[in-house]
Structure formats: C-alpha cells, structure tokens
Length: 332
Ligand SMILES: [Zn+2]
Image 1 (cartoon, helix red, strand yellow):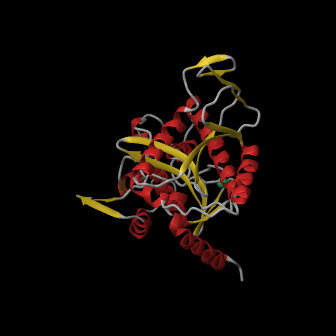
Image 2 (cartoon, rainbow, N blue to C red; image 1 turned 90 degrees about the horizontal axis):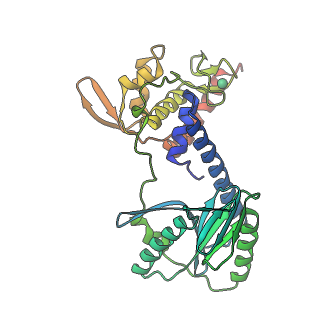
Image 3 (cartoon, helix red, strand yellow; image 1 turned 60 degrees about the vertical axis):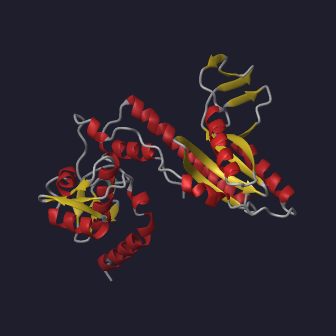
C-alpha cells in the first residue's frame, strides 16, 4: 500500500485536533484527492499490468543534490514508463511552448516535474549502463479537465480511464517478446532519498490550542469509557485497545512535532493528566526506540509519521492484541 505523504499525515492529525485554516483545509483536500487518485491508479495498474516486469511506486531520488519525486515507474520489456499523476481541473492548452489555463497563459509548466525527473533518471541509468528506453506519461485524474496539447512534446498525456486501456494494449503487444530483465531497481537504490517534509513542524505554531488526549480515529472525539483493556468512544462507540490507543497517540504527537525527539514529559502534556504516566512509560519502552537520556528525561526516536506507517511491520502484533481482548471481553 502506498504511503500518504508527510504533509498529508501532518494535516490529518492537525485536522483531528484543531480547526484548520482555509489554506490548510485546501491543502488537505488536495492531498486527499491526490492520494485517492494515486491509490486508484495503483489498483488499476495492478489489475491490468500483471505481465509487467516490475513496478516501483512513489520514489524519491537525490542525484548530486537534485531531488526528484516519481509517482510510478513501470517496466514493460525494454521500456520504463515514468508516470506522473496530475490532479488538475479546468481547461489547459499547450501551444507555442506555453501553457494556457482557461485561456490565460500560466507561468507554471505542467511538464516541468516530469521533465526534471526524466533527466535525472536517464542520467543515472546511462551512467550505470542500464539500457532502457524511458517514456514520460502524464495521467490526469479528473475526467472533466480538458488537456489540449497542440504540438509534439515527447510526453504521452492520458486520462486515467484511457491510460489503463493503453497499458493493456502495450502489454499485449509485448507478450511474445523476449522479456528484458533489467537491474534498474538495484541501480537506483543508492539514490533513494527520504520523502519531502515541510520545513517547520507544529512548534512554529505555539499559540494554537490542540485537542488533548486520545482522539477517536472515527469521529475525532476525545471522551472515552475506559475498560480494563480497551477504550470505547463515548460519541460513536468505536473501540480500540488501550495499548494501540497510546501508541497511536504517541505517533500523532510525533507527526505534528516531527522535528523533536519523543520525550515522556511532552507526551504526557499532549495526553493530559488523566492518562497514566506509568502506562505511558511502559508503552514507550515496549514499542519505541530509546535514543538517549538527559537528567530525568528519556528520549525516544521520532519517525514523524502516523501509526499505520510507523508500525507497518508490526500490524500483525496489534491485530493479535485486538483479537485477544475481544476474546477476554466476550461474555462466553
Ligand atoms: Zn468516536
């Protein structure tokens, strides 16, 4: 499953704990739409491109200080499709080397990002003697947007619905050809970079009040009926194990304050006094990586992402805990 961008995760936590500004609301909507479209594209490609040699989603590369982000790379035979997903609305025309949006010239070129990504990718593959032809493909998610490219650009532009047909056709045509098994993924590995992060975390915004405590992932309420092993949301009835609720909240704190290490004192302030400091310490020791200690404070490593990403590899554990608790709390 594709990860949500760092910005998306940050805005989600912020939205659950405070009122967003208009700009943040717009940014969150754009993230939701973009991510939804990318996931849809992933699923579509997974269905139609089963004969593809290899796929790499959401790739960040750093080559000699140049950072690029690629939505999807798809290898079919000796061709590598460099796919960039766009979530544009309105009417776009490209003529005389200029983009027009609803008739007005724009300074922003829709081709910039994919051209830069192509140049870096081509350079790395060339230097490492990987002989793959790169084809640039822009996929537009919004079927009501019109994209009118009136001259040769060397970039394939497709809507999501015709992209799938197009890929399927290419796969059919390549089916009987000798498959080219390249080592392009191994060659790119040394250049893989951390995904982009905004420069400031929530520390830069100290005046804004945040809803304290464990927040319900379903209704964003923070009032719970506490049982021995789990919490039940007073507003919507959603239940989660105590252990997962604490871990999720620590991750949410880490997402908002991604520049800070995790420290028990700050986490206790984020949770509020009614939550047990003894249990918080136990959870930190059990699930988080100890970093260092100064005076009375222990510091833990902050990955700066939400529970689903942070504990991606431990989901089985949390599912087991859930199952055990359902068994314990069942009347039989
Ligand atoms: Zn709820």
